[in-house]
Length: 242
Image 1 (cartoon, rainbow, N blue to C red):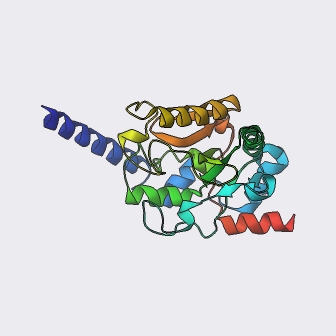
Image 2: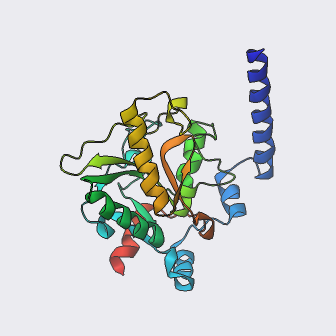
């Protein structure tokens, strides 16, 4: 019976995917991007900033000096086993950066800090991820785009401030198993406590969980921001010229 249900589920997902792909003209990156209104050039990005300064994409290394980064997609140390980003940068929208600064400041009082695995993700990377791992529980659907593409999602964990050693969490980053879910509770008291601590401070400062991944948090106002596909090097060049 389980096998039959699994086959039905797999078939249903496949049919939905085919339907959406057709709606997005064979699911090509260009056509999906166009239909979603993805911002892909600096001129359009600057226009957004002129209309609302909260659209600014901020480099966390400068905004939160000393922040720990382990940008996995800037190396082959990720589920694709390929280097996806040309720069190991953690970039987020202005209000997201401000919230993370408050979190970092509060954690320091407990001898802790945050470590960032991923933040802003160009839309092209989302397309690549889906090509490698077409499971929309763990990888964003290109026909919707990712909150990461909006500069409003962060993948992170907690570390001890003095040693930079990570607190024990349910799984490593990008572990696509049931243990990564917030609803999974067959864990040690220490791990449950650490996961709860991360969730508590993130929610306190305006983030919400993504149930399938303990490390992924979305800024509560993510719908206010557009999808982006500007490469890191262009954003760095833009910030350096300002």
